Structure formats: C-alpha cells, structure tokens
Image 1 (cartoon, rainbow, N blue to C red):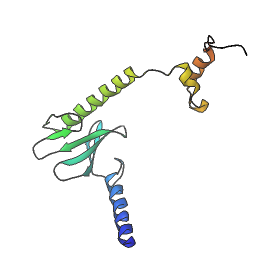
Image 2: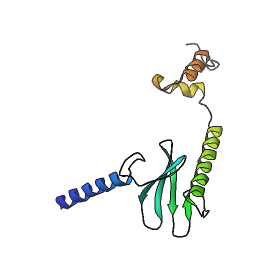
Image 3: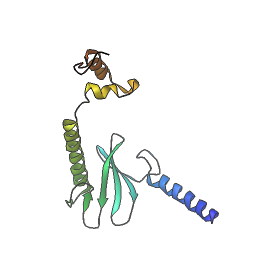
Image 4: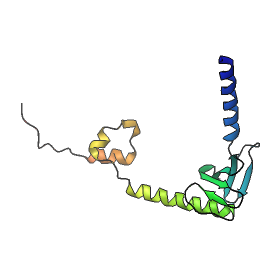
Amino acid sequence: MITTLSVQQTQLEESLEKILLPPTDPNAEVQEIPPYKLVYVNGACPRTYRVYTDNSMIGVIFQHITHWSNAVDKIRYAEPVDAVVGLDQFMKVARVSTTATEQSPTEEELLDIEFDALTSDEWERLKRYVPETRDLVAA
C-alpha cells in the first residue's frame, strides 16, 4: 500500500510539472497572440489555457468545440483573441477598483506592523504622528 501511494504521489508530481510549464519552457504548448501567450494546461473539451502577458499569468481561457470562453464572464467568443482581451480588460478593471477601495492603514495600525515591513511613506507618516493623550491619568 505504501508503494502504491508513493507511485501515485510520484505520478501526481510529474503530471503537475507538465501542467504548470511556464510559457518559456520548450516543452510547453504555446500559442502566441501578441502581446499574449496561451499555454495549454489540460482537457479535451474544453481545452484549458493559461494566459500570460509579460511572463505573468492574468487568467484562464477555454477552447470549446464551437467557441472560446474565459473564466470571468459568460460570453461565447468566436476567436481566442476576443476571449483573451475580454479577460485582460476585466482584470484591469478589477485591479483599478481594488486599489481605489483600499484604504491606507491608520498610524495606530502602522504601529502594529513590523518595522521592516513598513514603506518609506509609512515611516514618514509615523515620524509626524502625535498620539492623542486625553485619556491619560496621573499616577
């Protein structure tokens, strides 16, 4: 039983290595649609592709028998480039809305962060910070 488990684990590790090939790997099945690279992952119908731009993955698209789709909308695209562009535009909007809604931490929250993890801007904010002392009582 241990032998079977170790064989299965080895097979899993080998299959993961094949699935997660980067677009620069010579064994990767890559389709180029400048500026994008589609790297085949697995599947017959739909075939799954990871989408890269500038060597960073932006998402996943699927090749069906009659159409292409991406992992973010319910649209059926006739061409892979359309599915990729739809995915890329969605991811750009998602990044903008995420950064627009993020709030910088308060000075009190910055005091709880490790000093090595603070940015120079956060250090400058802490240098100017004067805590409120209204609740102090003399002993």
